[in-house]
Image (tube, rainbow, N blue to C red; front, side, top):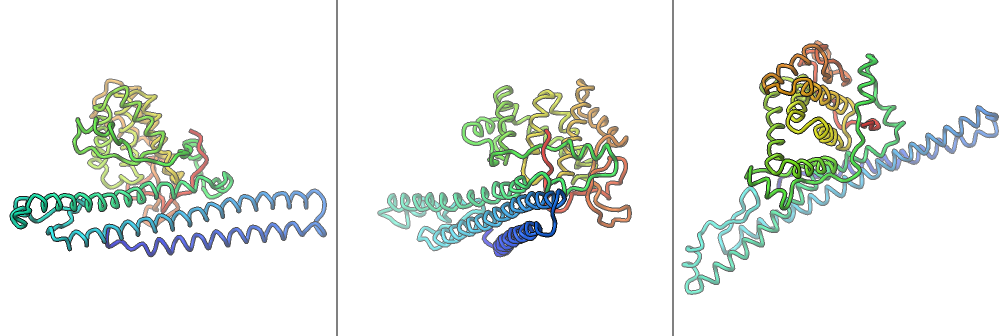
Length: 393
């Protein structure tokens, strides 16, 4: 972390801000030119053109505003991370130059090469005071370094999520205009309909406090993860209805689905057949244990992160539904039987994947397609962050 170079992020922030200003000026200039057409472009057609120009101008202004917010946020996050890295660097130097022979562990904890007994002997007859001073120094330095590390974690994870969530502020006409639909009418309907609106609240790490402590009784190394508000609400419902062990078991089912996909489809776990299998199997497992309603609520909430690529969101939500349907039709199926049923859905083309390569391996625009229509080598994620479609779920 101390070697991170935030220079490119700052350059990106400046570039985005410059583009925002340019877009704003171009939109204003274009609208003014159309407005000056009254003298030579009269009648209903002229009025319609000028009305459309105002609509386009306002839409473009919105886009410029979004870009401006992105530039400001990118700059702020970069500065925040740099400040915390500087804090870590300064406190690390302070620890290493300390009289107490201190060093900093990878997790930010400050420790001494010498035991308290050795420190006491070195400073005899004031050993007790020396040990107390050393303990105070290590505590203060640890708090400062670990606090800075936590700040960087929040800026990195929550900041990245909030950054891409700004794309949700684009107008619906811009969102729809940037997405190419598949030729297959059913796939086009899936792309349009299997979208969910982004959460209106900032994501947070969950669980924390007593909820984390309660879950760690069952899983001592359990760690919080970044979740949307809707995901947290669903997990709190699970905690209330099934207790801490129910939450831990839900995380285990998530791992089980991931491990099964990694084992059986290692070449296509990123938006290919492996990913489709994982989502469907995951939903089937949770539907058996927690019911269809909770599973649909939670897995839809999971997709409410900002800037989710439309093809990926449609793929995941659609495959989630197929997995729930499989579980409802086979409530007593074993995990092994569920896996085979999901494989059947894959092989018959009832699941969706993202095709991003031609049969000879050349890149092509990413688009959803049926799971039996392309080989695993032709699948993969869409490039970059996607402009989302309006949510319907």
